[in-house]
Length: 489
Image (tube, rainbow, N blue to C red; front, side, top):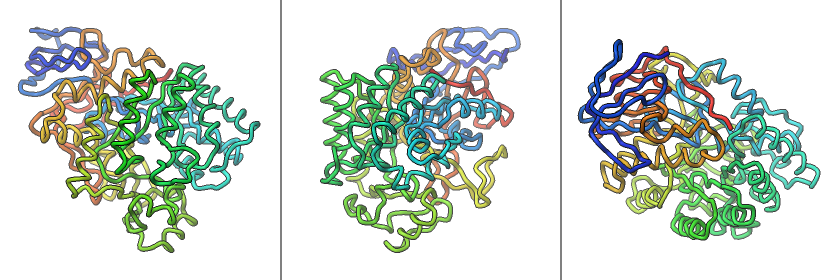
């Protein structure tokens, strides 16, 4: 049993009920044991949180961080559950087993990997439950082609097996194979509907960016949801829609009004991150994004790609290497307004698309804290949630604190509610809820990570509890805390 913790005098936010009230919170045995004007049980840790905001820890549906180092950065961003649902990992049984053996400070979970299933069937590449191996195949033309009926059947069988192993849905990196037959996506959605799990999709190109696309990427999600009845999650609408986000969001909202089970997420950055070999980074296509090769920066070296020839060289020599793509100008008020509109959209959730942290020697993991210098990643790994809170609560007043926790905690839990009993106690703050809690200083919450210094932890998280264990106390990490548990269907 963990030591009881009593949080006294804080503003307690329950996004399920939309309430914010000053009261005490008693955490015991991994649950919220009591709320109100409370006395501490014997031996309890008592923390005065007067003037602070207490709410359910953030649930990140879109985190590619599979390391202690990366999860610790996310902890300082208020995250208590980090799930890789857009890409997924394969085999999921191995992914869960390895995370459990290594220990995690945050809860973790994975979707079945459509990309991994295709790699195994189309390329004969056996997935090894790592993101690096997934990224390595995305630029392969043989992986990007349409499946034959036999190949599709084999891929679907693999994904169905993964769902049986506890995968939290099916992650579909459709944007990396943008010319495949749309019937394949409908078949995946039909499998998800039959299994009662969601899909999480990185959509193919919009018609504005590629008039020759087999189908507009966001419209494809809407059509498949309507046709199959599947619950379908549209990943990072800000980065796939770019300056066309208003059109896409209006279409998604119409589909929801008509009864489709489509949900959407966004992150508050004008730059994305992926493998340099991604199909949509083909030099001839960049102009459709209103960018060029110089808008691409290699994560590991900091190299800004000088021209088309250098981009072709990088794509041929190291297609799986991570890069950053500047698709909006974060210094332009008009582009910042687009990002805000993505977050203001009714029921849009915050999700980070957090990327692995790597060091010059090629390592992706360390238990040293603070992190050793020289780590590289996208700043969204460290700063997504508190950047969103700074923008939407502190600076613009677009969200109240209950609304902020609804976007960051409650709604993500609802995406998973039909899939797994594990999340029924998450995303809310009431008696009996899971003791995954974040205590924020409302005057301080902000990101500090930048594109040139991406591993600076956010500030404003005073305390963070995962399964009732203090991972962060008084703004300091407990490096011995590994209370993370698997979230699986």
